[in-house]
Image (cartoon, rainbow, N blue to C red; front, side, top):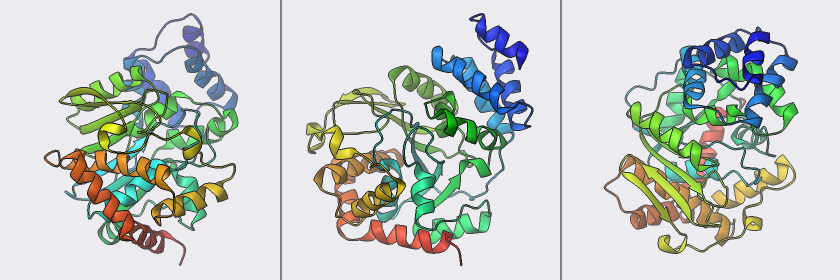
Length: 333
């Protein structure tokens, strides 16, 4: 690590192979917390390169714990986090709305490192016990429409850096990696990013890998469709800028999306949204993200039809029922 840090401090970039080897060493536990903190801090002071991002990703996927879900047609819905907005769990709620429409979701997530509540926090608060059991995943997917992969169980590197990321409490390059290293290698993804340069890198990587991917970024900085501003959408077909009004949805304020001061508060907001009690602003935000996920799975469907399906999943109680079944299958017995 001393040599690597020396290279970085001299403003030199890592090659893809260098980055891969560093991440393999992190996975093998060869560095202490102080070294990891110094390494992560470098990338807070300068942008990561495409080669570095790909090399880190190569290593994580190389060492991942495999998951076999067969040929199921499913989507991952996930944001990078690290946008500093402390929103409620928008992407996680969107997963259960999509499942409530009868589609399948394979979500990869983690604890929040720079926000109050990540996906793993809100699920754990409801009694979910994280597992790497393949049979449980298949059952959860069949019966609830969602299976959840808690990232540290599938990546030694992500497990190794967890305490340091939490102690730093700021966005690191691991935020960039999370959405790219789902161990199931899903062929469909809705990915939210916190800036446009990362959108370009994600688009290059997912297109190269043949992933049917929709990448979104709200132009006021959110790593999801927040409806607080116009937002950019990138797919294999091109890029566009959308507004809430073009979707027929209200423009909301940052305060509408606030996730609370505690995990308990974040969990209550999450329940209210899935139960149809979240209020117009929060519900609209989740519906927008769910609709884009549905259209990623089924490009022939119009956004307006996808929005109708998502709204019906919430208002009929099917989204909430999907979550109830998920918790029942994945909690302590």
